[in-house]
Image (cartoon, rainbow, N blue to C red; front, side, top):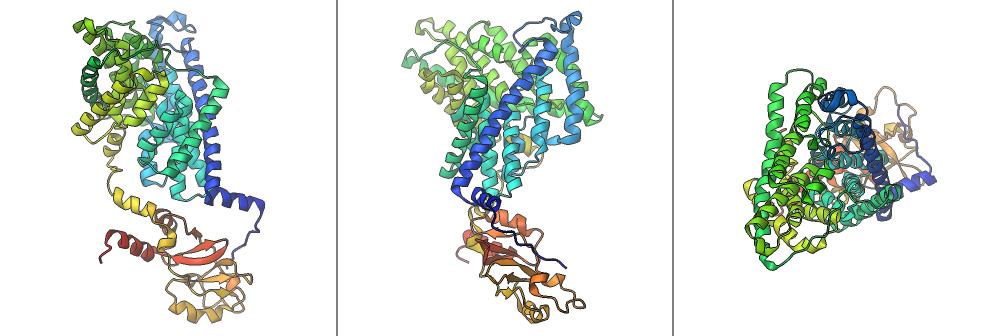
Length: 583
């Protein structure tokens, strides 16, 4: 015997209904997620700094040169061979045992969670990703912070949404809020955070999504700035566009960057494939063994240690010759690809900016030498190259342009930057429709672009558009024996039960009635709790709820009163109206 316990309309219940069902509640959730993402970004930053300092004795080792760790002076620069191995021994088992999703650069996992899993990301991912990525970067992994913080913020938003049991379409927005907040707080780039979430995570622009994601991004940025101050990752001199004669050079750079950005993605997965082919041991040990190879790269080119922003800044500022800039470009591609290939955890956003900065500056120096009368500024080409290479790799031109603008504050070069980004994205897209993020998913057999029309329809259509009129309700005091004739003719395998005040109490399910044990029973005593839908829920959310209730369908409620009923047939009928309106 099962019965439904009707909860009183307590303050907590009303708060839950406000958060889950209203626009103002969604704003409240965006504020909460933004604050959490901002705090998470700060904690993650200091975690990386702490581990880097523990290993090297410096906050950032990349610009120190081939020198000893201040904590291990006896080893000299040879500690670079040991650091990635020790790091791999720590984060390898952690990722393998608790959250395999935390391996790699993180953003593709968030993308597939939004596109295929309704925005559901396991809560443990945030904690494991934070520690694993901090260990990887702090012990020499040549990867970025943005992938981990996107996954951390997204997991936070998803966890809050799942705890509150919000519909799928809102859960996706909450994931995007976490991603935007993470980017905003990490790079001090609230506008770029918004468009990163819209272009790459949601892959759609709506007024509701834009407004909510903006709130989360701004909140995260404010929290981070209160805690760490208004710092900038890159401190560069002001650059400007000398004359219109410079535009063709920026156009050529954009085309070159389009090829390099596309090539970076291919090198990344080529090396990962090579690592997969060679490795035959347990996965948890792979980062430690592969760490020997990564250590060799760091010993040869210590500028590859960690994220490498000081090296990027030095390169754009003109402290390196063209040959060394190109060496750093190739070295970053190899070091990042090797870090990911051996099972490391970190992002590819910052490495793409690094590669672009080296490419653009080298191109600018060469152009300046060839045409000295134009007074070209190589550093300006470096900034444009940063945006162009990332745009080519990600096919996210708006986010690419904005992130460089906000990182540097260099508005004077916005026109050549936009032109180069457009050309780089267009050429890269002509070469291949895959990006550095979607290519990882395609290699697993996941094409998030497939059936996007169907997914969009299920996300757009609501329960109220598909539901049928509810079956005739029965009073809670109705004898079970009197229900048998009604159940035999019901469209659904259940009859809804109302309390005397008209509120929905549950449903009597045909399959749960025992003919030999129902004397004296009432409908209220036999009522079963079925998950309730709301009229504004998407059909995609409804299909997930219907998965365990195929025979009965589910009730549709408004203010605890029954307003309709929905089963799989109703969903198919509504979908058919959209895709076959003439039939």
